Length: 146
Image (cartoon, rainbow, N blue to C red):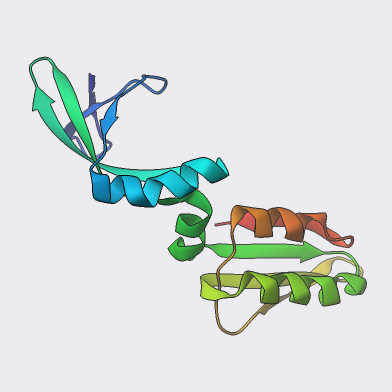
């Protein structure tokens, strides 16, 4: 564990980026965790850290699929198009992802050197797979997550 200072001047303790840590899991949390491990899904694990001698004891207090956590977080996505044919598959992908807190803005070029921004009403639960699907649509130049 390293002691570091935040930009505001507060001292915090931080694990080295690639440190291996053991996490204790309660039977209740294990019941949630087991199916996710069987799917080999990326996970977001919330832990409680308690000092123990010169180290830390980590206990899992929650676990969920990383895709669900990302979708729930409600990021703002900017989707840049260069072809109007991308609109139908874009719509289908967003409908497949379902409703959530994520906002989506579409940027369409207006020749010769301008673009229009269209912010879609409502929100979308865009997972990491959904973002990759959006990027793979012909006519989508880029997808930027804010």
